[in-house]
Image (cartoon, rainbow, N blue to C red; front, top):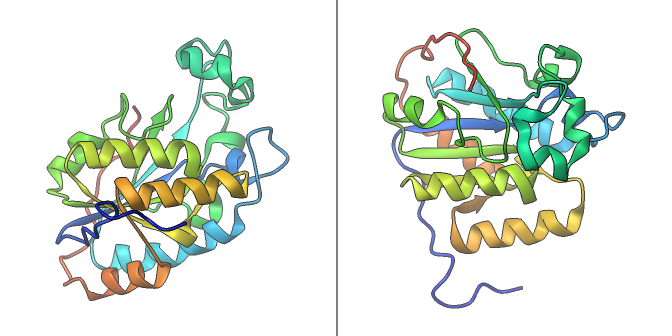
Length: 216
């Protein structure tokens, strides 16, 4: 499918990026969970992005998802997807970030309840505080929380880059369709190699910002 004229202009990277890892919790990366799938290729791609980001002092933010046993804090979203009730507050077996791409000291893990990483979390305030102009969005799922996060990011005025190999979905058709739509309307879908090259070319700015883990 070709992008029609007037859509899909490349915005490019800015000068102060942040790396966002959306919902790569154990439950989403393990097919034994009702919300899970084998996301090894995306995990491996994110694992490649983390070292150059950390070496250049690029802030890295993670999100996870967790609910009370009743699911009341998830509203209609949890009623629509009852499998989300497997993601319980204080259950690290489900909600901790996959060990292959685990946060290091100083990296923030935000707990969210709804698709966008921005909705009712502290993400926007932290991006402003870090003077970020570019959000590199990775994680899952392309058709859900990635898309919602990308739409909010561009709505707040950020440049958005989505390394294609670093996002995933449970189903290939919505994955492909949403990558197309994101690239046409909201952000730049780029090869992993391009994102890596950009991060590696950034000037060193000192050690990563040390901050306490936060919850939304």
